[in-house]
Image (tube, each protein chain N blue to C red):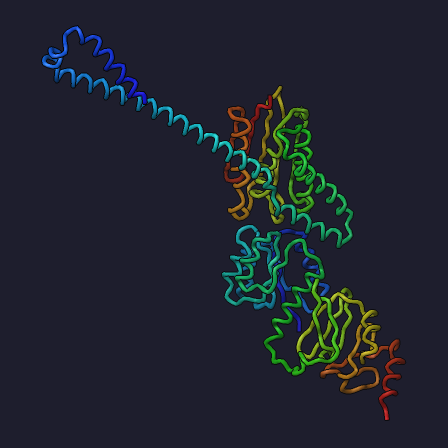
Length: 262
Length: 237
């Protein structure tokens, strides 16, 4: 279409300028030169419009790809959030089974903490953000359940004294790091294992450090999945606003996360 | 017959619960417990056992992989919180697959399966298994198993369950001795002891304080002696 318009104008202008030379003259003197120049003009226009068309198409495709990717990520994000460890849930229920069997008072404690955890997962995990307090409570309940499960045979610290718990954060960011600490370091055989978690805030910047001793590793298939998930979620939810360092030495596993919650 | 049994389970409470369940069943003797598969492997390769309770997800080696490496496989009962492992479990000819959380009735059902498997290899001496006659339904987990009364030798009451001794197998069931005594009284069954209800048709010999069924002596206690005497009088010429 564009080419047809261009050619039409070319013919008109050429006719106008060359009409002064007379028709017969024009064909005799300028025959092949005119042919070449017209061809050149046409070719350059074709290439030029072709490039425009290519560029437009390319941008369009890139756009489509991006929206597709975004949709994919949104779906994935939803899925990642729903990936609450069912193993933990059913094992806790089984422990509860035991505690009721031996008529232990801890049974009721476990029920309350498990309910808190489920409430958080069911009602709060869908929200874009929650207060730091809620996330902290969730971790505290989780840790207490793990402590009961492992019979308190390890050294556990969770320090939140320096944290402003009214800041808002995306839900379920901490748990993969905490779960990971248990997967890597804690077994009920080794009584010297430990986990040390520190959470603090300065203005709108939040610092989380999770450290744990390294013990026997649980089978590899499941560990690591949670970490990969949270990395994706951080990249999606806090682009350019977080740093995450993971260090593994022979005896210690160290995670530090800095997050700008502004 | 007692089943020599090993427990491999990394969760402390789950291990204790299994131990507790096993201790309630007189047929089971727990000879060893382990918190992970790698520790258990040398023991399992050197000591013959009858039954293995094994968790699937454990540190080091999974229960499924461990069972694959065993040369002399005992009867296997997998325990796990993961439903998706069930397929793997049954591919390895597991006798049963206990999905956590499970309770005592479900546990008993699994043990019944083991008992019926180990006893199935013995010849079936009962010809009249599916011929008519009177029968009862016995609770097995959530199922009810139909058992002809003629097959029952005696019923033994344990602390938490009753055990039906049939001619060629045993079935454990969470039923109540008192209820059984009452419902079977009309059908030729008689209570002779706190722990025994017998099928009178199976009695071989009666002594002073005991009687013999299928070569086994069962006690007649003071409480039930009067009732038993009445039964004897009825059948004496």
